[in-house]
Amino acid sequence: MLWPLVAIAGLYAIYMLTLFFLQRRLIFPGAPAAWSGSPLPGDMERLWIKTPLADCEAFFLPPSTDETPYPSLLFAHGNAERIEQWIEPFRDFAALGLGVLLVEYPGYGRSHGTPSQSAITQLMTAAFDTLAARDDIDGGRITAVGRSVGGAAVCRIPPDRPAALVLMSTFTSIRAFALPFLLPPFTVLDPYDNFAALRSYSGPVLIIHGKQDGTVPVSHARQLARATQHSSLVLHNCGHNDCPPDWSGFVRCVRDFLQANRILDSQRTRE
Image (cartoon, rainbow, N blue to C red; front, side, top):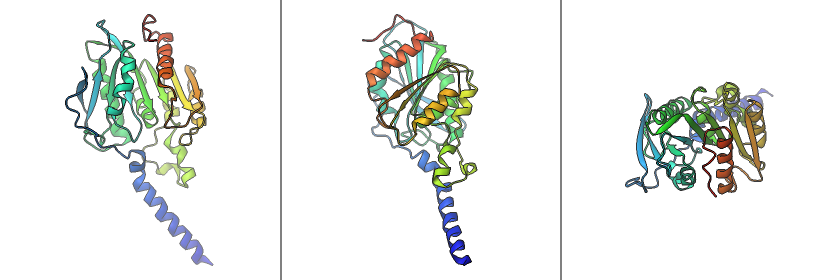
């Protein structure tokens, strides 16, 4: 009678070890560069963000204004995306008078290194500090924006730095996904506890999520909104990869949020 139990235990051990060693590949599958990246479109600027663990590429899109210093956005994308996919969408924010820095993760595109919570935390902090050090940027008006795992990336920036956070389709913690996969939470190498991060952050937070999100259930967004007294929760009738469903509406929503929190000049509007 013990043999079936031994066999089941052996199969579970193999399953658990397989997921344990593959988890970073599942969380950070990487994405090769889709184009050479040279020359850059328009007046964009290429930067290299250097950290002890990796040298990573970033694109800076200046705003359509000559007034300096100006506010800016620091963007972290989803786990199977690349920064070049977001160049055109973020031109809408440049039109509002915001500088935009798109940051590529270690091991993605042309960036060096290997992705992990530690490596990406170092990267996003260094990217923020690089942006804040520019003479044309108002370091006190930098908003960190992240989509999906990118929301976790910006939540790891030290809480005294960003003027505001915008989280799109972001989870409470990767450990929340462990038990459904029959894994002990302590086996998660990159826990990304975003709930705890928001509890230590005192600035305004805009949380945008899809009610039909099958990857990160909407309950995660509601929990994140409860983590801070300075949150605004906006829910859409959409899933994970189609959120937000209306980009123009998203731009207006972020604009209004930034204006309400005096990060963006209320005179700057985009019809």
